[in-house]
Picture 1 (cartoon, rainbow, N blue to C red):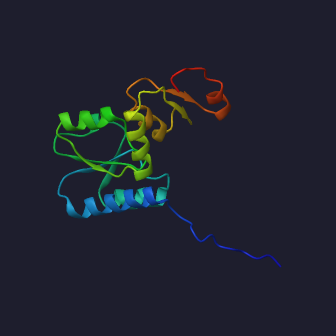
Picture 2: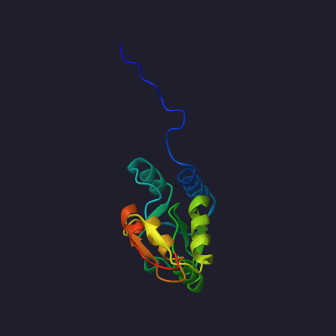
Length: 153
């Protein structure tokens, strides 16, 4: 007979749960247009629920206007995103995962060459890259990172 064991910690990670809660709260409290910079999570049921609550998904700040509210998903965004939103009078609700935000601070504060291991097209990698003061090197595998020769790593 097979035994099925349910994981004690299943479901969304802390960062995603936080982003969903912030989006739901904003949709309930705000009279402004509420947007999410990309889907908060790759889960059609959740994104559908949020859309029904009034949270619209966008892919660029060009899709919103002065006074609108944009939620930054748990993957985070690069520094230039925050700068542009501020210049254009767009309010932000920052739902960046605290662990991801810590990485943003680390790469922004370092004088060393940053090497990011991950998918160059993934929103989290793009966000981290966007906080680097010098261009980072993005590789897809650890062995590629180990092969990089630099005196400033």
